[in-house]
Image 1: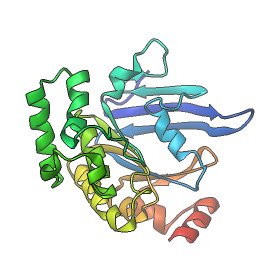
Image 2 (image 1 turned 60 degrees about the vertical axis):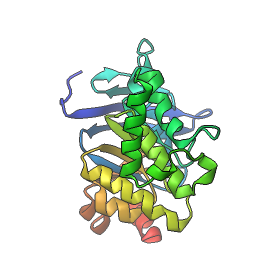
Image 3 (image 1 turned 135 degrees about the vertical axis):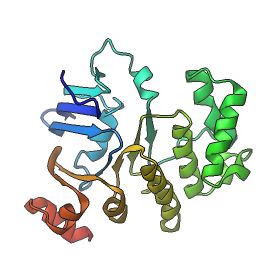
Image 4 (image 1 turned 90 degrees about the vertical axis):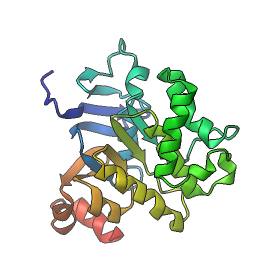
Length: 248
């Protein structure tokens, strides 16, 4: 498999069948590069979240291959959990452990999976909490935080593993509108710091401002992709034109 050493993911002819004959993903071939921020948009049910979740094998493809840092992670002999440690994943819902303090939520994975000492994990967690302005909430429980604060903690929890890429699956769609901004600001900061990000979102302002590249997925296929200015100002595909006319 020849691949550019800057390539983080290479996806080849990815297909995912749900039920007989319905392909949520229908032959996607794509690459994502280190330091790139790629935003994926498309109508509901188009396959964008299925595609994102396939990148770390939360969805198992029916056909095709996914290479992560040169390794075919779709090979059954590969231990996907080792590779998942290098991929931060942030969902719509925060998936924090409700019975643990914020600090414990941030420390558990580095201690268990990376054998960090409690002191080391806590020191790193406090640095990250300070970065997002939530160091005063370290001993609170998730139920004591707002939705926007919980989502920022969920992002920080992924960062605590020092991942090579962050995958975001509609991270603001479950938030009240006034809380969306604080989460997007953190994501913008990550982009400025050079974090590789693949983001499924409906936030077009974020896509315009932060993405290096935008993919439009419909019916399980990448219909069009481009840099933000061209993507929004000069769409080529009639389906993309129709989609943008409804949301902009």
